[in-house]
Length: 328
Image (cartoon, rainbow, N blue to C red; front, side, top):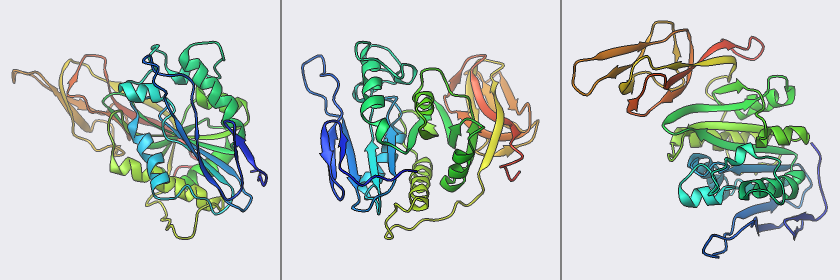
């Protein structure tokens, strides 16, 4: 990774080595003309080093990622021993305010990158992020959570052919890595095209803060910063309790019936084909269907909604592990 020594000009603010500054990522006011301030916390060491960008809240309902970056700031982990750390806890501030995943215009920010200066509100935010913040970063760690009611085990996502990210993933120490293709017009895809290394972290579910997921994100970030020589010595770093499991392929197991659903298997568990994962019942006590694993693998996502319809995704289970990086 590159190192920088000179003053950093980010969002029209000059930040010198040794300074910590809060700059404003502003795009548009609310419809009431109320200004919306989106803080970006930039902390620089006097010693030259890499620039790491932590982002969260691309989706306004993914509060667990926001909590992870908040803790990095609140605990002072973002004060680097060398180099620069940039923290953006909430990118989609409009969705965050309205308790919605999307922007007020209904668009998903993670499907409009790299954005434009004269497009939708979401597109303009994407453009500003890509042109005013991302160019400064050597490494980006972007925090997400599962969709509504679907709880993701802590995991990292990126494409399979990236050896550098494989090495960083082992250091981060999340329980799982799920190899996945870059999605069209996503933040990850755009950063990849710009030659920026990005680790995407998934964990938990929307509108929910989970301590295990939060700790996984915070501890993984600390391990990365220590590896880069950026973490201050006052912070202790523990090794992951287990080696990371690298997953090549996985599939969703869907409901065969509609009804009331309850999972009985723990997130992150390894199951054998035929294992009872949960059950679907009716409200009248006349029906009870046991959901059994259709294949052996790790359960990396569980639907926690109490009501499901036929065809709804219930469990995301690995089908093929990477022989090169998994200890299984």
